[in-house]
Length: 422
Image (tube, rainbow, N blue to C red; front, side, top):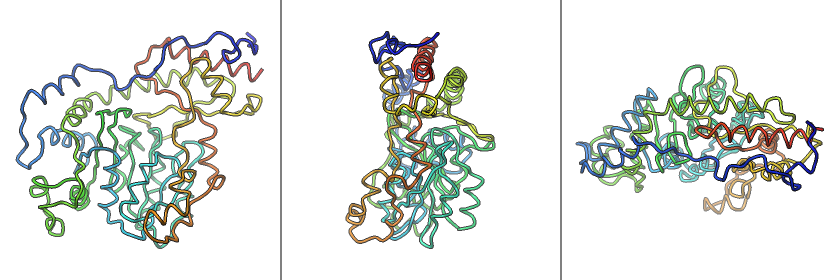
């Protein structure tokens, strides 16, 4: 059936989507989660023998078991976990840390707390993940670490990245905030680098209201991360390396502990993580299958040997040349008029944000002139990242939504795109 201009809701036609907003409701309610909170408050549970809540210990033990890691440290946010990671590997003033352009800014901003400098590099145009070729071009004698983000749950090219870190003797920190349960060649992300960091905020697959968790197989890294995240009893009972035990009484001035209620929620939800992943993939695979034949819209790809796990965020590609070269912001307006909850991804590439692009702000922030800002790019200089950002849509991450809603989204895409391609 031919779609005419008057049929589009933007021009006065009937909306394709009739459901009231918001269409995506996360995290899901569960009796187990409710009971875990109630149990914590009613139990009067005391601290363990190491000086911190037993529920925190249980969650950390269960999470490191899930990840098959030696150590796990929970924090009050994923950002705090990353800050602890950067400190743990020993970053200092003047060091460079390579960071991906396509990520949430909190992947990189904790670098500033060590007085090191993040160096923004390009990402691949197919997955949006950091590009190993761009990493290689940006390494200098001052490069000490790389932080990667498994964007939207898609694992980075770990084989190539590990070759680079090994050859150049660089630390590798994985931001797995989008990627709970994601695997590369059968191995869970977070286990490849020196440290893996996860977010537990309410939009993530493992949602605990707020929180984070850090994993590592290196005892010194774990102890240093603990030093900068906590103080008091836990330090005295868990630190054993002499250079770390000096600070038993005080820690290093921060208190980034997870709230026990968040730990209780996370511990409960961890039991259901594989169920959530399976359900989410079922819904998103159905959606991808239905939209792949719509002109101008292409589902996100998942490369061989990769499994998205959490699949955080659904971002289909747009080919405007198939849609009368319509500008993507206009396409978004047409789709929103149909009732669709759709937008650009919330995070512009880092090199387009003032904190990373303003040469004056950076040195002032660090309190001195820093020549390392030479790598901070302006618009147009990281083309693959900009192409990915400018030509993808950000949709809700269907998981437990009604099939009827998903079908209405499909109908909206067909309606608008068939009109534009006709």
